[in-house]
Image 1 (cartoon, rainbow, N blue to C red):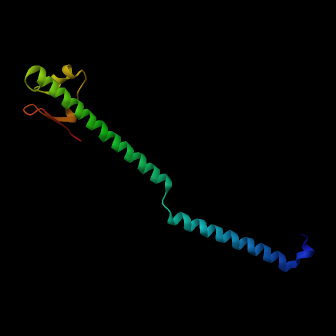
Image 2 (image 1 turned 120 degrees about the vertical axis):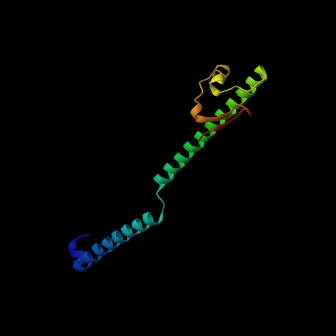
Image 3 (image 1 turned 90 degrees about the horizontal axis):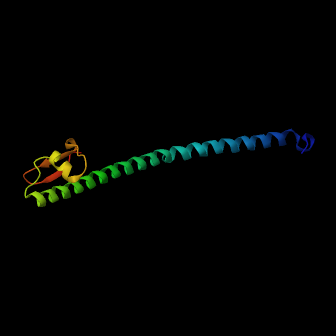
Amino acid sequence: MMKSELGSSGIVRRVGSRLTGLVLLVLWGLSATACSENPVQDYGNKVLDAYDRSGKSANHASVVNLQRAVEAYRAANGYYPPSLQDLEGFAGQTIDPALYQYSPSTGKIEAVR
């Protein structure tokens, strides 16, 4: 359209409606971000929760495997191993005693964490 067709009031109306639309769009965007949760933070929290659960599952699996090795040691020798270091050769794996509480009298193993 040409300037002569719209006149000065038509240009002002068109600019005013665009400005109003832009202001409304900005306000809508600000209110939407203020009301919603942060999806990146939610994703990060889910990843950390999954990591924690996997660590707990791994600890549980290690305790179960060591408990089976303790029972196999007892079946072969007639008594529980005196320490976790004595179980290493029988279990075929290296055991860090700092990660577990072991009772030679009962043969029970628990994870420290």
